[in-house]
Length: 304
Picture 1 (spheres, rainbow, N blue to C red):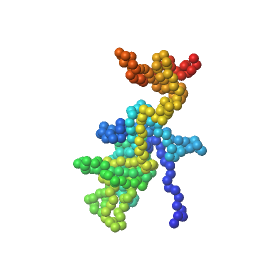
Picture 2 (cartoon, rainbow, N blue to C red):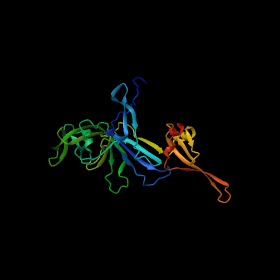
Picture 3 (cartoon, rainbow, N blue to C red):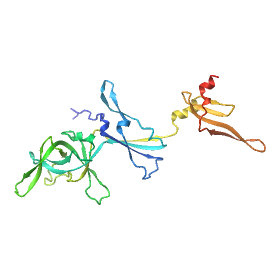
């Protein structure tokens, strides 16, 4: 039974142009405020693919560096990041058959749909949509949920076509069919499943309706969700206070903590509060300095 079995999981070598990145921010995990709206990140600016060390012109599948912009990820709290295949939204122009094979049904899309980005139009060329997933938006205007949940189809072929009006057995009736034509701006997509099951040969699977909005998504990789917690102090900055160099100025009481490169990290003023009548010390205080005193550089002090 094991003869011929082999691994089918392959690292994704998807292009950043086929990826969408969204994120939301919450100051705490328990904050469920509706204001935590999802925002977009430009994948070409934050996602860096790795090159194969054995061939510098090839992408090393499965390894990408996520470089988050510091101007957007500044607040302390939790950032939820979704990395998913890019979605293309368009409208079904018609549902029909091929004139050369009337038993093959499919949906017809318009390449020049204004909702399709110019960078995505090349995906509608012959064969480029094979393996993509189609999801449907409901045509019921009263529905609270616009997306038809858990309903999807997989594109098995796509080709440019031209509409052809053909007479059927009834002379007064016509059916719209399509023939292949690479100069047309219409695309005929076959889907799976699209044929009737053997147990109910008179019932065809749902493939959509003319005028219905759909979402087309590539299936190059599985969506990923990451949680990034932004904190004021991390392991390294805490180590500065424990193991980094420190100085205390006896003249003005400035206490300085340095990072591992001997640069000023934090400064405090140390002083005592005494009883105004007896002069008895009441408190020892360490107050943070908001503006560093750069005359306390470690190199300048130790070179004296």
